[in-house]
Amino acid sequence: MWLQRLALGAPGPVGGLALIMRRSIIEGCAGYLPERIVTNEELAARVDTSDEWVRVRTGIQERRIAADDQQTSDLATQAAERALANAGMRAEEIDLILVATTTPDNTFPSTAVKVQAQLGATGGPAFDIQAVCAGFVYGLAAADGYLRTGGADSALVIGAEIFSRILDWEDRSTCVLFGDGAGAVVLRAANGDGSNADRGILSHHLHSDGTLYDLLYVDGGVSTTQKSGYLRMAGQEVFRHAVNKLSDVLLEGLAANDMTATDVDWLVPHQANKRIIDATARKLGLPTEKVILTVDKHANTSAASIPLALAEAEADGRLKAGDVVLIEAIGGGLAWGSSVIRW
Ligand code: UT7
Image 1 (cartoon, protein in one colour):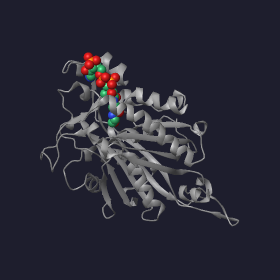
Image 2: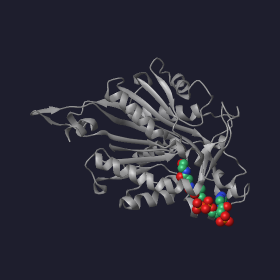
Image 3: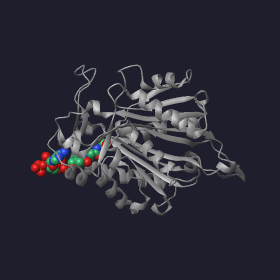
């Protein structure tokens, strides 16, 4: 029990003394969406689909598409600048920059170093995380590890994607599902005392299963075709895995924190399909009023979907200091995970 509390960084008495653990607190968050809105009707004029099919099967009404001259780093930098402003911090105060993306500007270097240069925050480590739609959860866990162990005192974790560039616009079963965007959070290490005593990231649970590689992948790449390729997905199978694996990994997170669904204030899920989100919440026994939804307006923005949703819910006052917030995501790999955060 104490070992578990230690692992989770929970404060508690050891030998009569208060044990104080470093934790990562989310100091700020923000999103950036490209200006251009593409509705289902607009897509229906280009591919054999309908507004009704897309709404009923996915909950999506519209998505944003990046301008031709925008790269993933541009979206990421915009989100990062807004998150820094939201946190009241300057770029020079950031020790570590992680960009979760599947659609980097170039094969190398990382998109993160470009963002670092655009922000004017050079010197510290900056690198990309590749876990597709689970990228933000993976990135948050990696940054949290740095902060907890003293490797950094602050970090920017960004999810940024231009999925419109890897979509096969002739394939109606996938091209209607995705959108472009970026979201960012600023993390700061805190000692788990004072007014912030119980706030911060409490746990992460990450998983992957490479035997499911072929369910969701891009049919190109440097060592295969030397072209970036297009997204391919066995939608129904991914759907089934998503509902089961996401509900399991959320329960794993709750159990590790001695919590149940009644302790949860907000579920901020990866936004792939409203039906997946509804089914996952139902399996946990969470009412829909506690679920943050952005899939209707953003579609699936892969690694950007969770920070975009966090930013929206924080900006409109739903997320409040002290709230218990669950995040979860699954995507290509398959790779999936959840985190429990006290906001
Ligand atoms: O973030 C990464 C994780 N990804 C996901 O979580 C996605 C998981 N999968 C899904 O969200 C759903 O499986 C989809 C939205 C992709 C598809 O929904 P579905 O209810 O599983 O539909 P389906 O694939 O079984 O297709 C049903 C029918 C088919 O026609 P027939 O064979 O019944 O005549 C499809 O050809 O719908 C047809 N269809 C479409 N019709 C109109 C497929 N795409 C479209 C479309 N417009 N865009």
